[in-house]
Length: 368
Ligand SMILES: [Fe+2]
Image (tube, rainbow, N blue to C red):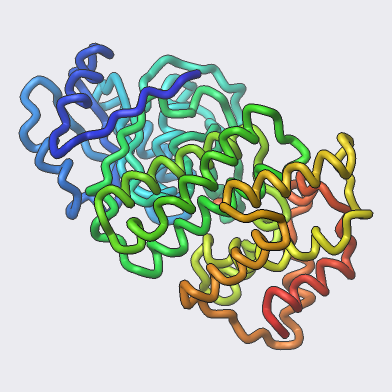
């Protein structure tokens, strides 16, 4: 499916047109706390031909019950389309409302077979990181357990890339979300599921991050616009390949030490990249070691480096130059960390990683 990308230039006329084209007069707007600071709220306040119903009754790491309440809200408003404006959690909630909104309300939606519908889903990311607006994945929590929801029909058909939405991002979140996008692209490039199409997206995303980083970090409009494109393109890459060891290993760093997700993923990948270069004999990609080496060279050239070794150094330097801290682990943390690694994501990594390797990598990640 091709995604229609809208780029507002100080106005939202393209969005008006998109709603007209879709025949939408009743809209469910799913948004988080960022909404009060967004320029687009004026657009919503001044809408005349479209009735907007807000749904914002959800928390980060959204619970199933919140999604079910969103589905009720969608039905009571008799909405014809869903507009998600926010970070990853707003996207997750909106995607699940879209997926469940025509299903049987008498049973848990997660236990029912998925029946795709044609309710339009429009997404406006307020960070340049997750790329969730380009993927078929959503995560919600059921009875405290993380539950992944995956379906092609939840990829938003329209994306509004509004650089003004990034203006208020706090510096740490700005850096961490950018690193999340970069890690998505890098991991996608070396994933065992990579295809010509995903590699093209991944290379482009890495180039976009590299090119727009200075402007984005300076909070310039052009840089913010470029980083939104980068994150979206990296999202398209992982929509095909999924993420790999960097993401498999990073989640516990967030819950143990309170690091932002992109910060944690970057710490993992800056240890993994040189490890991969030092252990070419560990390649498990069925296409062979030469294929993997070509992927690593692709990453290097997209980062404007001559060789993968330089790209690994550049990633290391980037994390240091951004001033991102490395937590101090307690000795018993390593067991917890090794046990936390997501085995499903680890399978997408193109090299054999045993428990000893993972332990050694966590020592490198935490510089212990
Ligand atoms: Fe991520």
